[in-house]
Length: 583
Image 1: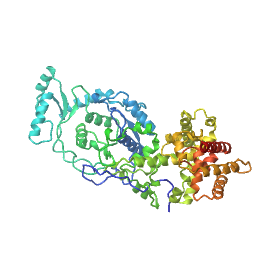
Image 2: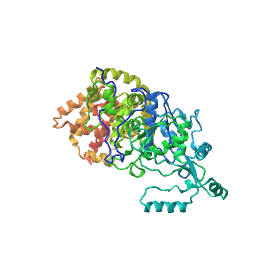
Image 3: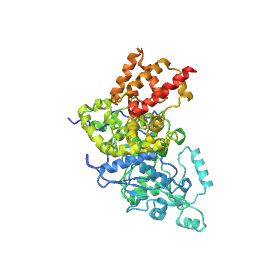
Image 4: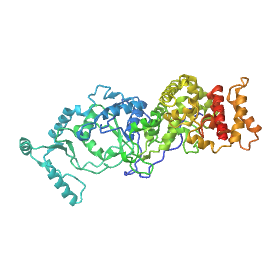
């Protein structure tokens, strides 16, 4: 029996209350021999530079990346910027930066180059015009000279007739002489595609399965606008063909366009790629994920301090049945859910995602974006990168001690570089704190690493650690209002007597400076003072050492500060209390 040697989860992500508007279909795998991997697969991520990269866009790029790597194929980045009215300056650089931050390294495309360039659609307009002319010449498209006012009247008339169409195809019937005269008169025009209403079926979608053309629209749609730029429909079909794209994975919102694209491929005489449409993401209440309803900008998550590996891990779980993937790859896994409803079997590295990801397990139901789930994955990602995952007793109990011992050794080796990078980032954050920037201990690498080991298991994000660690470098200001309010809840006699005894014992060079010895001193002092609650003494020590109501274990805190600094702070705190009592 194989054992679970990776930290995965067995709990499916929560699904939206707002389900897909499309009917449920039988799920399909790519068209190839049973179990075979597609050969020479070429995929693409083709965003429009209209602003920041949306979470849904990053997930689309991720799924393309995972499948290209799993299949041994390639994926490319293409910029679809033909809608000139929506362009936002700097968007392309922002998109590329977000992909680089997420670790999604495309093989061809903008900034990388490749044999199918240029990869920006505004640099390919001559190609689209040539192909639009080809369709006109072979009778699959026509010039439309309707003015905006005429189009508005047509739409109003069609609505009055109870039809959903927006155009009645009247320019289909213009003779070549009429077309010529309109052009000679300088009338602006668009090129429309002649939709065939007789087409009633299409190849199955790789995710949504077999079904009728979604949307049921047979309206003659625009291929080329009056400004000479193509619409999405023409440009994407031409580019996907010329760039050799074998699989198109994009958002569910493009399902109504599938019938248009299949008819375009047929008109050109080209073999279409296989299409798969990814379910949309939504908020936890089932509402649409939008700019106004929360953070959807990938860069916002970077600024907030989330690890790229955690966000990628999080998005991979959205719409993919990783539970089933694990059941297929591992004979026996213990079911495990923590009290916070998260599971260690949710945590994947990129290589693990590539290995486990299965297109056949991507479903068409929308998945909710849960910030608490992302927080959990970020915590676990930090532990994994720091080599501390295998120090967690609950985690070891989950995967088994034998596996744990073996994997812990491997984890320590593979995490060395990532751990060093985390500590370096933590150090820079500490040096940026005004209150500790002059501390000589900022140059003590071992001291900082000890603090890192204490604080990281308690942190959700790395950037939270430095502000919470300032007290390691600077003792408390006992006259501060909050520190004073903390003392007001303490018992002064316990504070004065307890700290005096502990200082004396800890000052002795004969006492070994380790956490067990320090803890024994504290326990003995509490016993000698006949305290009913040990917490009375512990809170007094915490007040003297940090001024904070919570933090790491006292023995661990003292060991990290060192004998000299610990005694100095205890003496300072006790002296402040004694002076306070004399007032």
